[in-house]
Length: 332
Image 1: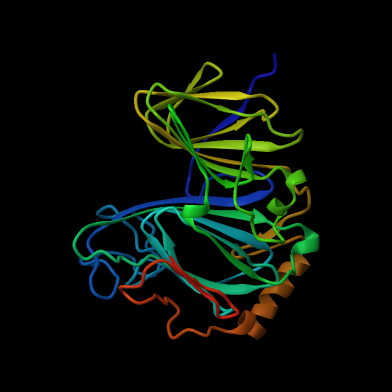
Image 2: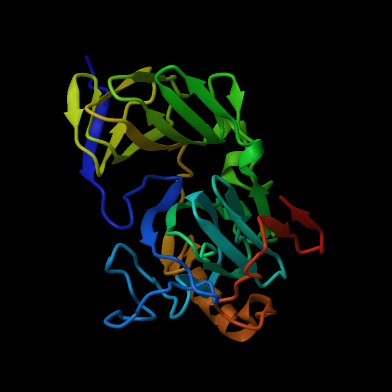
């Protein structure tokens, strides 16, 4: 019998992905109390500010110098899907869109023909620690969609279905799980066509519990990322945390947690099967297209930066909200 497990690999930073996904990174930072400027109420001495990716005292500043996060930077030719389970992310972009999301919210952004955005992690709590748990997933766009208009969409956690079982929970961020359907993705996404069988699930399995993953469509690639727990068992094989498992998705798969609760992310989809040429924040089909993308960004800045700061954050007391390019504001 053909093995259900096709490959097991160690998780790095970022995680290894398969077509149609380009990139997935997991951030877990235990930030201290915040100061009045939304940064850490802590000394930043000894950090490589501007490029701080080494965990020190439980956290990283990334490309931020006073507030952790990623100041203004461009993207073209793919989508970012940002899942914030704990903490908050402040988004600002060259379309004039903005938002503060977190506590389970998901932002789905189609970069398409080109957009700049910043992603900062405001430390809103001044009386307690500010833990951040975040996934950022890059989903490729096919050639026909590389130059669609940029699009910004919020999937509020109140609208994302969470299936509750005796043995755990399944958060359905994209696609479907059995008969439970996720909110619609961005309109030009590879995930917008059900034939592409794209799904993103965040799964918790209680200790000693099991959860069954349904069969996928033929030719769908499914990868399971085991990022927190003690041990899981798949098809009789024990797997330790910080490993990814590519599985044969044409089988129903039973996942069992051993020792403690297990937390997993599942990415699946049919491959786009087109050439990928990528350089930093640009993902195209050819090297020539990459060169054109970089030149266009130098000339146009993809519309420029309408905000006061490259590491733009929102008001300290501001709650969760989204401001769309047409000026519409949604408060949560």
